[in-house]
Length: 502
Image (cartoon, rainbow, N blue to C red; front, side):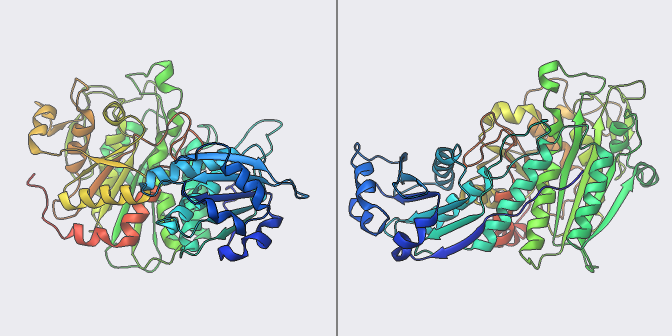
């Protein structure tokens, strides 16, 4: 599998005073203003046309208007009205609307103008850049005659605000990679292909790479993972570990991802509609991987490790069954209840393996439960943590990044629902109510109490029509909020806080 071209458009920052001349060569010009900023059009190319566009009707925020300039390029002009107070999600959502207005034209050169009187102009600029990079990136296509992609080569940003262009570009590349991987068909990204792709990425980014094969995992006693993988026709499943080279000390952060490249449900077979998009069930691994690569690109001093549990969950004569009892890597014996609860099984051993290196923080990502989708829809994702302060820090990072998170309870008495009469714990409850909470309580058993840990149930990993600035059903949700948490340093304070009494 060949990796995609993740290059983002060339970004340059200029002052708004140069907009009239500098933006004249752009095929599209976007001007972001507050609704009452009528006098700000004098510095734009063809100011009378912008004034006429503004006067078309009463300006309201958030909204978008378009016209065409009379220059040789017939540049499309987009006037976007921004509310003076907006959340990060609202900023990204308006930015997405702007880019949808440009999509049919597919400009190669784009000028973004931010009114200097607009509060939080830098944050608005970042939202527009994120949306432009998301909309102009094409997911893999296997059509005999692929549609013409939008190849955006240059973005000219006219703003008085300071914008971290390097971070904007790295975040966009990471989100695009997560989306691209997650959208791949299951016969293109099976466990063997994923293994090869990870080895390629490790070489490209100078990361240490280790693959724990099924034989390795059997020697380690990773019976929870192997119970899921045993039904596969090929022995290509395994747990991948990518880490910073030369780092002998314990990692500062371990990222763990669920990488189920296709999920049939196993013996408890899914229905047609429930199975249709189960090639995206490896989205958690894509988020963990992409976050690692973005931190590496940005030169983060953090010592990092990334563990990806990669397998199919297949149906067949060797597939695991309800009422099987298996032993996980940390010695916990598990009573299998439902074979479609395979995500928590593979994550159990991945968490236990990651915990052996005693990281300062463990974060896991998984498209784990339908219950979380029923609780939140696909607009939010769920958070669980053994440190209340860490859960709060993640919710704050979600708010700041525009990837909204909701913290769920993790009280010890939920364990009563997954008690087992024949093993240490039941894989899940027989009934599905509260399954997202039961799954998190199950996973917590594989994380030592002294290690700060959070679990992200990615209910927003896929949404019909996209989410905020993301135009595709596959959203790559999780990259932005995790980078915000780790780059801000908020995780360090949260990790030192008192753990849950569980």
